[in-house]
Amino acid sequence: MSSQLKRSIRQTLTIARRDFIATVFTPIFLLFLFAPLIMGSFGAIGGLGAASVADGASDKTRIVAILPRDLAPAMTTADTRLRAAFRRDEAPPTLTVIEPGIEPGIAPGTDPKTDPAVVAARQADAQFARHDLEASAVLYGPLDAPTILYGARGSRAADYLALVAGDALAAQRLGSDMPRVVATKRQVVRDTPSASGQHQSAFFAVFGIFFLTLFLSGQVVGTMAEERNNKVIEVLAAAVPLESVFLGKLVGMFGVAVLFVGFWGTVVGQIGALLPPGAAAALAEIVPAVGLPTFVILFGAYFTMAYLLLGSVFLGVGAQASTMREIQMLSLPITIIQVAMFGLATAAASHPGTWLATVAEVFPLSSPFAMAGHAANSPGLWPHVAALAWQLLWVTIFISVGARLFRRGVLQSGSARPFWRRRARHAKAN
Image (cartoon, rainbow, N blue to C red; front, side, top):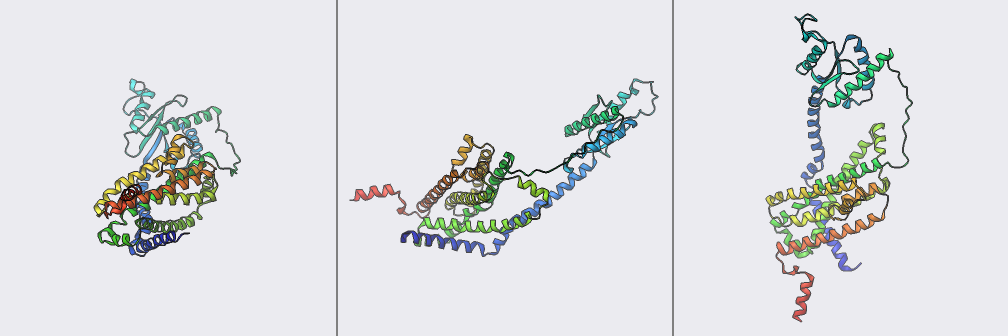
């Protein structure tokens, strides 16, 4: 290793250590570290409020069957049997069975309106105007050809009422309850990952890298604004090459990101050990194609590349801003870029092997996201070696271009001419 390379590495690590200490050893860092807990708390409070409102509304929602008294037990028994197949949050509204009635004050047979079918239709319409319950769907008429009315969000409830009516009709014609099937259930653990499990792990990989980079990489935008204002950057640029300054700042902020991920990764890992057996078994089905240990390594590598790629671009763009207002104006396009890369990589993970996946895997800013999804969908390892080298090349390009733009646009240094112009000028002078 040459002395110049050693010096560059030492200078880069010095800048990184300086920025890391200046960021971590401050009280505001604790607020940043516990920001997910604060946001989660607010989200939980809002979720509890929304859940209480939804539960209050669901308590009054009903599906109604207008049937004679002799058919009510068969309808109720059929509802109980079919409802057992639903989860609590997916179950249809509670069934209410009422008897068909005759309008008061009119003797049967004296007016066409006293026809039982007309009265049942009126009674069914009246259920939607009641204030003591909210009818989602109403069934009336004979069980072999019933009429079902339903509201704006009652289509599935109407389908369920038709199934219950068919079950009750079958029990009535049998003269007894429907036969019960006592099945022996045995859970099977797959030896190989399923296609759906691979797609789910691909989505989780893309979303995980997107969320972490969205939350962490945006902070590098403002790292140089304060130092531009107090002229510290000019002192650093005089003592250290700007490329080392940019890379050092990027590495220092990445160290902060690693500390953040390590802290919350440990917390989530401890919470995951407390999951019930059913949830743990469901998570076990989400297995990437390359295997879990290899996938963890690749996920860490691609998170590193995603942070360095986006961070180098944001650092170069943010270095051109001199005020907090300009930095705030840069936040929107930065967020749009990140969301666009997430959308492109998600589409690639859903359609592996297509031209869209190839574009996402080759384009530098989306490559880490897409290749993380590729690791979940395909067992091959050699594309990841090429992808990591490709991404590292673009990190170098972005840092070099950002430093050059900063040198020429902000420091207004004449030494930033391209090397081919410097060579031409040197040849002309000779």
